[in-house]
Image (cartoon, rainbow, N blue to C red; front, side):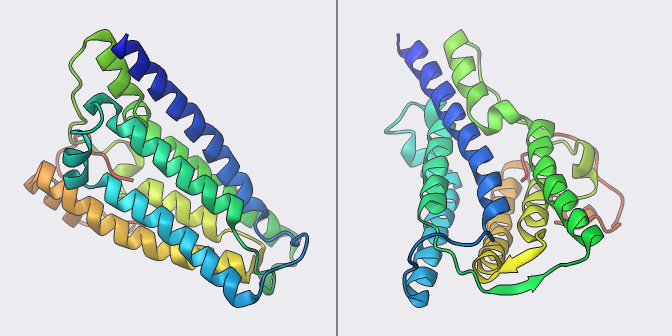
Length: 250
């Protein structure tokens, strides 16, 4: 019964994540639309948006750290740890979307039809990069499905081995790169969207440092060699790649 309950919990968390992910794409795409209704004072809106972004960043960063996982799995079953992280991340993102305050003043507007289409295409490319990147490393493990399924079937769960599939040969964090492309690709940049893009970019740069510190502690010299060989977010050529293996990087 316990195994079935944890499997059901993991599936539910994944469904919530999937709906939230699709909702987030729509949120970013429509962020620059004209606001409806009475707006709060500008300073209040900015503070609310900053607080929502901080809430998501703190949840995502703290719960992803190894020290928190060790403490957290004393409270919840270890197979449900990743699903719980996914659930909390989804809730934090839903709160951000629900209570986000528009700042509609235009920073720039692209008028050229070709330029608009290019930016829309980049928006789609960015989100596809994010999605494809999760499958290249292990979508099921990244979102907790593999953990709960292994527990349900009685199989031993083993984490990812070091590898550099596809774009990971050229960029250490293609998922984060996809987010950045999607967040910045808009033909009509408002104050709120610019604030969102700047703050999420800053968070991603910090999150990469924290994540890579964990990866170095797990994979040691192999990941250090990988850092020296492959650029972080842009596919600039560097030294020869180390021997491929699997690595969880975003």
